[in-house]
Amino acid sequence: MRTAHTPRFLATLAITCALALACTKHEATSDTPPATAPDPCSLISTDDLKRITGAPLREGESGGDEKSVHRCVWQEGGEAGAGSITVAIHVTNLEPLLGQLRNVPMNEPVAGIGDEAFWSNALNQLTVHAGQRVIVISFNSSGGAADHKAAAIEIAKIILNGL
Image (cartoon, rainbow, N blue to C red; front, side, top):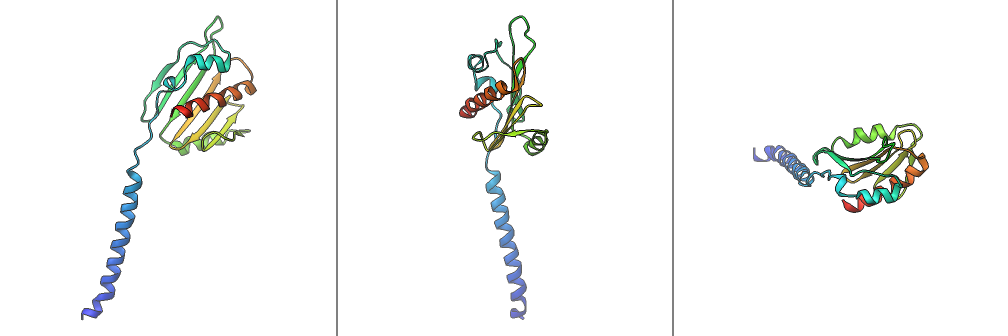
């Protein structure tokens, strides 16, 4: 009788070991702490933005939180003062966000920044996927898309260096 139960026992032991190994691997990956979204106002100075864009900007105002999305908005100063530059760092729902932003018509890939980056002339916006974060740099200000693209790339490099 003992030999009749041996194959069943071995099969049960193999399944148990496989499940234990799978659970161990899952726990190992979940030990990685979730990424945080630092305040973009602390990663790039208003003076740097003024130098990069040539825009008369006021100090940045931050909003959001480090567990989902943190934003900083720099309003244009001066008499017109209608425009702004926004930097947002996202750490949740990255794939749905990237899926939406990737599918904007006429996006242009931007090489050499993060894991993936693309510029949208339609949105006047640079999106950078870097590890567990998505950084979005948007312009709602005077100037052309080509100027904004070059400025956004320079801004992204500074922000990535600060992460």
